[in-house]
Length: 73
Image (cartoon, rainbow, N blue to C red):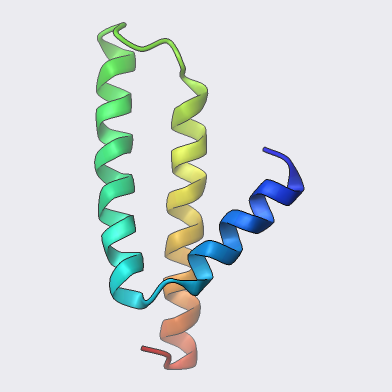
């Protein structure tokens, strides 16, 4: 992913409320689970999608932790 796309995604995530981030976190975890299952059963060949989802998950968790440390709801 290019730097500009990554910055745009990060900006969009930071603009979400904590509730919306938690919802996005849940959806991303579900999507990662499904993608792993599809790769394991050979119904999907895009294994790079797993890496992207894991990074998105890490970004969301990082933003939530930052907000926790700063006391932002």
